[in-house]
Amino acid sequence: MEQLTNLVISDRELTFISSLLLKLMNDTNATSAMLIDKSGQVVHVQGMGTRRNATTLGALLAGVFSSSREVARLLDEKDFRNIFQQGVQENIYTSMIEEQWLLVIIFDKLTHIGLVKVLSKKASDELGRILERVRTDTTRTKSSVINLQFRSSVEDTIDLLFRD
Amino acid sequence: MALINIATHEIHCKIVYYGIGYCGKTTNLQHVYKSINPQARGEMLSIATETERTLFFDFLPLDLGTVHGFRTRFHLYTVPGQILYERTRLAVLNGADGIVFVVDSQAEKFEENVQSIAELEMNMRRIGKDMGNFPFVMQWNKRDMPTALPTMVLERYLNRRHVPSFEAIASEGKGVFATLRSISKNVMAQL
Image (cartoon, rainbow over all chains, first blue to last red; front, side, top):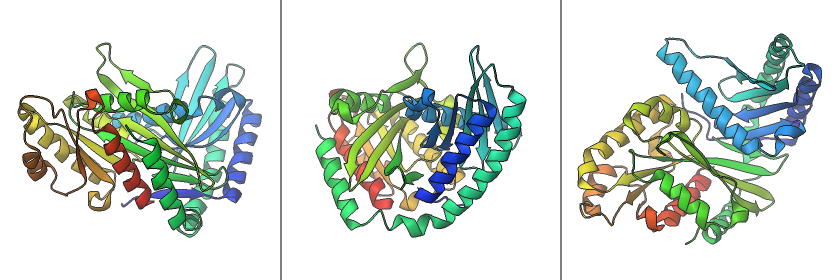
């Protein structure tokens, strides 16, 4: 299947995503909740602890997930939908949404993993519906951002910044 | 897949440097990291073995600043070049918006380069991307080596798609930014 070349997230959908992550974080008493694209790009973060390192975390967590899918294939498993990383202080629970996004919950020992699993599943279903709308809206919304002027300005910036 | 976040006014794109072991992928990123305006880059992350070979990937986030109200970011990745890490390369390729294929120009590496580019084409098919209209550039690296093949030969056998190509000596920084400029523009043109 040919993949979309980009995803455009509107104000409206980001507001939904933001409040959904906040609710999930509060209900599970997690320290952070993140939504990342499978390419490693961060869509949104809730929780102060991870904001500073969000870009690097996004790249690494997407890498871990991608790598685990390859492990699954070697075991003739379709894929691993969820990954649980257990630390001494902090734990990470990651679940895949519709082959495109990853929902990441970072929580400490005060939160029970069972609660995180159940509420992540519920949030994933809602995020799946948002993703569907984002996919549908992408082509229409993109033209409002990526126009000729933008392309020309970005080329100038590239010439200015990427030089010997 | 590029991510355009209208609410936060951000655009994120992923560029992957692909090629055989020791061809200079990490060296490209290291040169960009040390030469670019520090305000335009984040920390470079390398997941390497004890002998400094790339185990999983290198990662360098670049920030072009605000263009027409949108903060534009490129995330550069390298894949591990060693043959046994084929599945890891596939994992890193996931969601890429553009690819730089770094070629070790030395004659003794020619066959490995041919195999690597065939593997890349196969991996792209696996993740559902059509190389025919995908942002893709070639870099003929290690031009200073005594056994470097003429670029005409490399073009004929490795650049069958006739994509933009650049001569480079990444260890001296030559050709590194020319390559990056080309792939970045190519990626933006495809958005």
